[in-house]
Length: 136
Image (cartoon, rainbow, N blue to C red; front, side, top):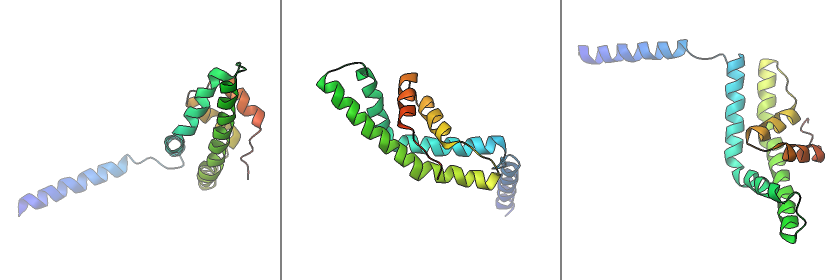
C-alpha cells in the first residue's frame, strides 16, 4: 500500500511544481503566448490562401495572362485571409484585450502576422493598398 501512496505523493508534488511555473495570462509572456497561439492556428487553417498570395508575388511585374490570373486569384485569397482574420482572430484578440486591459491595432497585427509569415515588403505595401479595417 505504501507504493501507491508514494506514487500519489510524487504526482501531487509534480502538479504543485507545475502550478508554480504557470504564467499569468495577462503578463507580457502570457499575452504573447496567447496571441502567438491564436496566430499560429490561424496560419495553419489558412495556409492554402497564404501560399496563393506568395505564389502571385512573382507576377507582380509581369503582364501576361497567367500573371493577371495569378494576381486576381491572390486578391481573392488575400480577401479571404483578411475576412478570416476579422472573423476568427480579431474576436480572440479583443477578448485578450478586454481581459488584460491592453489594446492593439488589429491592422498592424495583421501586417505583422503577414511579415512573420514571410511576406516581403511588396506584398505588405499591396496589403496597405487594400485598406483593411479590422476595428469593429
